[in-house]
Image (tube, rainbow, N blue to C red; front, top):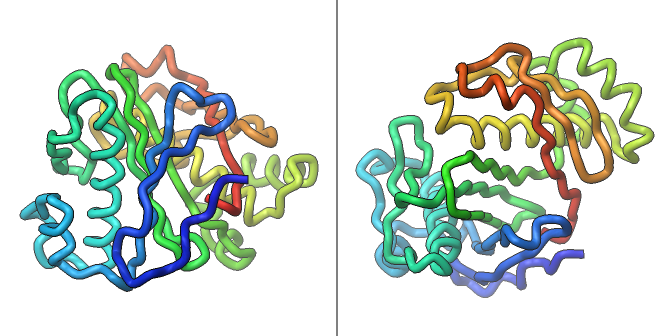
Length: 236
């Protein structure tokens, strides 16, 4: 079980730590636990993070998540000697990483706790990370048509029992895997593409295999299938 964030103490940032997940020991996840209710705009200055002009006037929830994500990014860049580099925000709200490295940021609220994760590695091959709270049954039933087609849904209905999942949990994992692939491929594709451009083929306890229905770019032809690592942890 991964360690839980500490209890609330009134501060926005509650803890920085590093998580090493099975099978991904060479790609540590830098975690920031934060209290969304304790955010104020002054937190940016206190933490030495610049608020981008494009986010001026954004809702406090969005600003708090952005700040926590950039704090996680700063810690993830530290081993590369790049902690002082600013991770700017692109036209499509994507992080703009320093030259020579790539990374991914995700944040969510888990059982009322704010959590931001970031992973960084050398190269430009593409990396995608997504952190999600479990959907409930009503949310899964409402959202699945925008996440997968009817064939995928039928496969999910038939396969969730073997994977020891509820249908809503299966929908959550398919969504999260496709979101991770979207993040990983965006730097190559350079545009948004739909979740229905990708189908899921197989699911195990720790992996989910995705397939591109059509090549998004000539460069993606060699990436027709991708295996996404999934971690179902209540303690994250």
